Image (cartoon, rainbow, N blue to C red; front, side):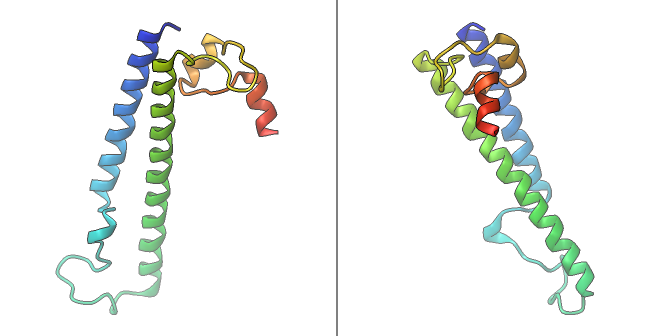
Length: 122
């Protein structure tokens, strides 16, 4: 894969991930600095049934886990963009061989060839 195509694909993926993360955070009010457990208009959460509170906590934790995964994927995209810039994109970081174009089509942030990725996962 040529560097221009790789850069374009990675930039599109970066924008897609950012959009998903932004929408998730906005939709579920995941701004931790402003989080308030009480529904709008209620002065206290004491009158809520414990199961309701547990469900809300579960949903919030699930959304936070998804957001963390998206942030991790953004870090991988940024790392791949740096490899494009320094000329090491598409080269396995373990063996130094070229990563197959088919693999980069499926996993554009791949750091390792299929063989070395399999060995790492063990």
